[in-house]
Amino acid sequence: MTKKERIEQDNRLFEIYCGMLYGGRFEEGEPIPLYYHFACPEFAVLRKTYGLEKIAGRGGDFSMALKICRWLAPNLMHEGDFFLTEGHEMPYNALALLEYAFGRKDRGLNCSCKAKILAECCLALGIHARRVGLYPNSPYDIDNHVVVEIFDMQKKKWCMLDPTTGGYFTDGTQPLSCLEMRAALSERRGSAVLPHQRGEIGALAERNAGWNLYYAKNSYYFTVETVSGFGMGTSRDAYLVPQGFDSCARNIKNAEFLLEKAGEWGWDEGALGRIARWADEVRERRPLVGSLAMWNPPSR
Image 1 (tube, helix red, strand yellow):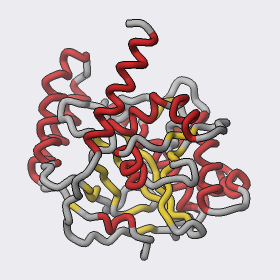
Image 2 (cartoon, rainbow, N blue to C red):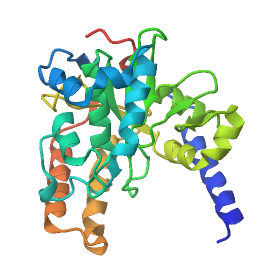
Image 3 (cartoon, helix red, strand yellow):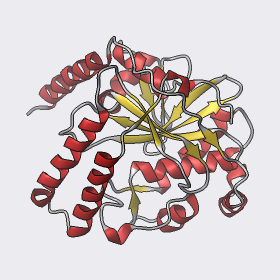
Image 4 (cartoon, helix red, strand yellow):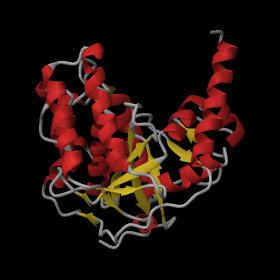
């Protein structure tokens, strides 16, 4: 395939994925309280150990969070299969994850771990922050993405930050939330913005076509963590899904597909065990389905 043919194929895929986001409504689930814990004593250690206040500097919430995001991104190598094997089990908090991987060329983290670190760094600075999972429609797609949303008190809105790229998504005038990004992509508008990039929105969209395609594929439905603080605590994922979409059936089929393909991909017994346990959890517990109210200003 030539470069021109690959670009044409990606452009067509982008149009298809954006079309899948177009129109329709979301399920109106139960009211779900979302909690943001700022008083965790570990946050003082996190601020001091990594000099977060100096890195964030002064400014609005989004500006400070973006500086933290762009400090983290080049210092965290990517390893998509992190946590699939038993050997990678470790405490799931920013202090442990940073100690393991920060600045290490031989150790990487997946996007979920990177988002956990960024969210906790922002919470440590008094900024409302939470992880948001971005998921595709297909149960035969083993890839999804996790980002962070922070609530900017000055802008009075949620804004998405991606610690994997050090970037965010914009409509050309302001940073967007995941929900706003989905709406923009459904109209084939907006673009990712990566570090050191400037220019008008059309040029950015062309330059970052690969990431825009990736976000479009993975924005069919979302999960939002219900408790944001140090470590996992009692947090669960709350789902925002299109009307009529059965995320539980999709997750079960996805787990079955992973188990079917695991041998072909050479995954070890540890990875198989983790996937099997996740499949059992999915079968035993129905998803917690929320609503658009999860993008209201935070109250806790």
